[in-house]
Length: 569
Image (cartoon, rainbow, N blue to C red; front, side, top):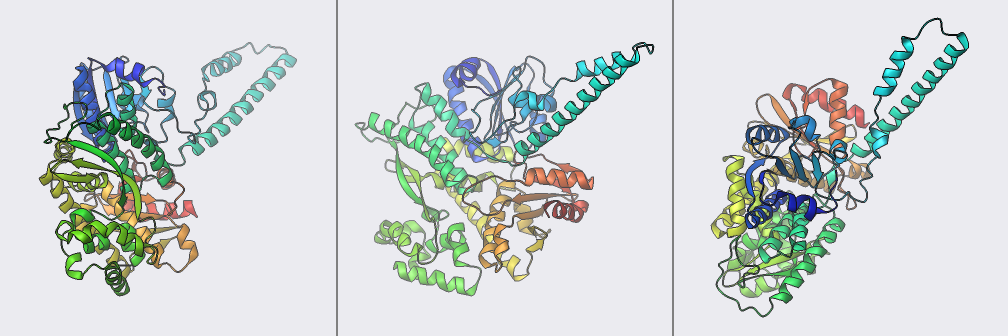
């Protein structure tokens, strides 16, 4: 059930208890986890932390760690599955679910005994009424059995009346089933993201009057991850950003007279480390440009590489033209940003805005925040997101190692770790650029009915990297926008994209992303994949919190795509 009083039903219940904390393997989940750790430590709550990526991971972690534990907190996972059915917990176990994935499973929504959804329903979630989707038919069945056992010597008029009543009940039940199926289809038709979990937990901490700069920064980074990865519309981002901006202003005014000292901030620091401040700033949608070269960032950013068509010769010429119009010498553009002349660095934001409209660089900037560290420079929220994308997706290391490394870096702000993350993500963006160029040169993006299809070739380095769902999503978004940029037919602007990548010797990942739009972030592929597999009769693993990513057997790939094409036609 949804919880309307988070302080009473979540915070006060867990104070001093032993908790199992299961956290999804994403940046918003990471930031939410850091805030919950801080909250648990201040209140003496004992917890076991286990990062998870799939539903299978949730089941394994629950079985291994649930002993002697009554309370389970799930962050950005668990909300879209029937937890009681999948995990089969003891009756005394209570689940607290903080999950930005939507729609929430209806069994979780209406389970008052063991499930607590730490959020309020979204305005457009349109949850069906309980009686419209759940009905007790036991009494009707028992009544039918009793009627069948009645004496056959029953008078004919009475028997006809009873038969008519039973027929009316069956018709009513059939209408109820039809209505239920329609409501269930409409409710589960699209998957999307609701309120950021990090923003939700930050509001809880703020309500408890425990807010500080560290906690605010964690929430900012968590929210910014949705913008960088393209998971939320600008409107949804601005709604949540306005709350954090107000809290930032209140913190700044509260400590405006505190002198700047050496930075000794840790997660257990004072409410407001005087050496740290957060300011509201406009940021550019250029990947890691403060930690890369200007040319490299322009060449590999979604907001610049796609409009300029940098995989073509004309695109290269336009890139050089932009640098000339901005007044940045080629030698300067190929130096790291911090090594450029200070006059160019200070004016770079204004210079890129001047040429943006001329060259079709739309929405090149967005409102964000900067973390200023006295004597140590500053970082924007997007810097942390790009670095964590690099650190979380090191395919040579285990998920647990990557997760805990990022968790430590979030509070320590270790420059070496952040720089390593930047370098890792630069390699990923370079691979994406190569994939885009190769896809057009070899014409590997094909029209399959009412969707576009792209298959990442196996036995390549890129195939191993894009096994990570986060990176596969980023590649798919680049690929779809690039195709639309070169497409000559208007109908292609309304087409979604399905990307396939080998997962192991016997399975492949299949990801679907909807057509490009600025007005919604809803994805219909989760339900479409499930229906296509049911029609075909092939096994499918919906094992990720995001249902638009599934695993199928490699031998079924062609038949599965054909079934999906027929379904969407």
